Length: 339
Ligand code: TXA
Ligand code: MG
Image (cartoon, rainbow, N blue to C red; front, side, top):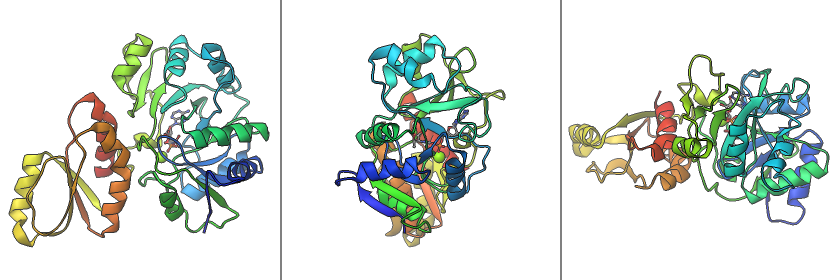
């Protein structure tokens, strides 16, 4: 079993920072989801991430940065300078408005740094997380000589991202206490992964929707956001099938969902339903109410998927979320879970 430490326990942050410095793996809580962290400047440490996740080594990882010590734009420019060879003004505006926070920026990479973490791409994904535990860890790691921390979501490739330390522990139960240290920082407040904006193509391109919405990005940059296209880099979070529980997920509008439940009638079983609308179903159906608020829905989404999966049902029927842009992140994850 991995070693699990309460993030507030004496010496926990320092122990985790030492693991990172020594090239080991740390389960790191962030405001979005838990990350599987290793030092970004050590190709062997980064290979441990890919091996543990079962992720193809050409899928790039996000590098997490400690908060800037100087306030405002100059601080953020300094923070990204060791990794990024060029930083457009709109990216600086996004850092100032959204960092620390749930936004990842893809920037042109300095060819000599973090090649393994970048999965061989000529760009690099950078993010400064807002979670106090992640920040303490990144600051302590920096003091121990670790400039940036590569961390994908701490789940096996293609599976649902973890939002609690328990989830991380379950995903990597086969790793020993000396192979993975998990810092328990409680449940992640946001609950879905960061918004990803490609800043390598002159104008911002949305690669993955998240808590920071398209409308916010356009308001901050004063530019219209392009959607990903053929020229966009591959990102595993953008594969059609991803974030998938074991059960088969199907999305349906409320009316269709109710009609399908009516057909099954009182004997219906082996189905879980996750819907905002109150529905009638047989007693054998696991009914779970989705919050009406997009942020609350995001916060619990992956934990609910895991819970419903754990009931052993082969089918999860989910009510299609509203088309509203506030729901784009939740909607994206559900469509990929259903693909
Ligand atoms: O919220 C998050 O972003 C979490 C926490 C731990 O920070 N991390 C996360 O990492 O979701 P991951 O690896 O599961 O998803 C990152 C996504 C992947 O789809 C990856 O392909 C993409 O970011 N990505 C990273 N670097 C990239 C690059 N240079 N170019 C294009 N896509 C990149
Ligand atoms: Mg992931």
